[in-house]
Image (cartoon, rainbow, N blue to C red):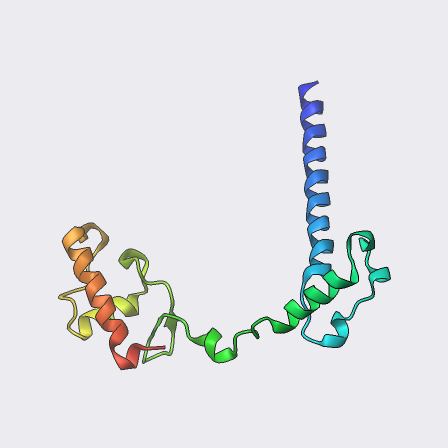
Length: 147
């Protein structure tokens, strides 16, 4: 009996999840702004919720969409914080945790003279981690490691 009830509850939860997910997709189709003015000129009769809209509200939303800031250019998108391996060209964007940072970053800290050696995980303490963070900040400022 309880197993049957559990199966029915799981099916009902999956149905609710499916309905909620599909409703968000249909609403998103009407909300997403387009870049062309011709695509934005939508008649009130074609919208499924036309009774709640007036021409003034449609014109207002179209004007807001037109006056929005343009999308960021590719230069703005590609300017990420990271370190680049000068030998292989590999780019590391997550290196804040020394234990999980890539090996070439640890080796670069030693070759640039910012750290004494590559530390093992059991050798790390608060003082060493503070010096590692300062060394990583200095490594980010070196030109050949910049992205």
